[in-house]
Image (cartoon, rainbow, N blue to C red; front, side, top):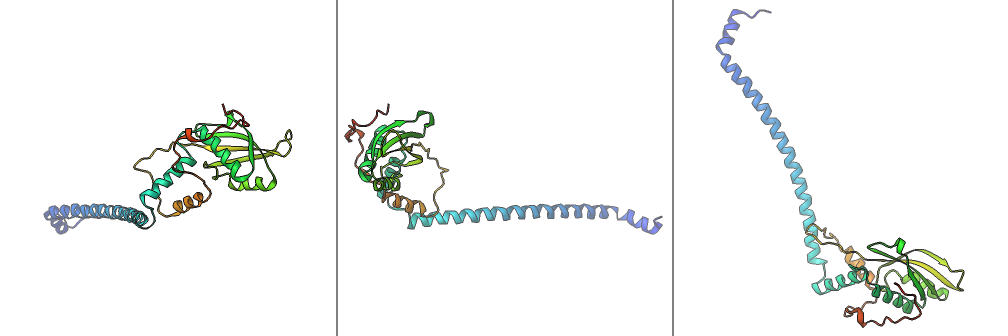
Amino acid sequence: MKIKPYLFRLIKQNAVYIISIFFLLVMIVFAIIIDLDRISSSELKIKALTKEVGLLQKKANLFQTTIPPTEKLDEDIKLLNSLIPNIEDYFSVIYSLETLSQKTGFFIVDYSVNVSKSSVDKLRLSVIGNGDSSSFIKFLDQYNFAGGRLITSDKIELNPELISAIKIDLTFYSKNVPVSGSSKLPTDDKIFKDLEAIKQKVSFDFSQTNPEDLDLSYPRKSNLF
């Protein structure tokens, strides 16, 4: 299709304007694309900041209304350090077993360390205890915390060599947890409620700081070492 001489002359005379308008349209399109990308990025940042502000507000409310005073926090820290000490302490293991025996009436008469199943932060013991059904049930109900240490068990069996003796595999825990500025703070009071529930089950004298002060002479037990 041929361009009419008048139209061709008109285009030639206004070529500069036509090219300028074309480049202006291209720039407008690019500007719109860039602005849309910025708007999308800003919306994502606003959502992230809104979420962060919400979490900070929850933590602020927690500090104002839920977190107990410093003295009580110090007591809670001592409790947790006694339940799960940074380094395993055989004195506290012995003391915990003796405490459980006295509190439940199910007496631990022998124990041995299961080296193959123990690790840096777990100490596995096989203990043998005896008592009536009532004391054994009481032991099962209280052994997790009542001895002043966190204890779990995954195996219970009768000992055919000893009449009325029960063998139980127990696990004591120790863990050195590093504290950093990135540690997550709780956003509700569940952890403090859980600690209060544990306190009801634990008999722990916070003034007792020296293991040497404990009476650890138990001639009827096996040597841990």
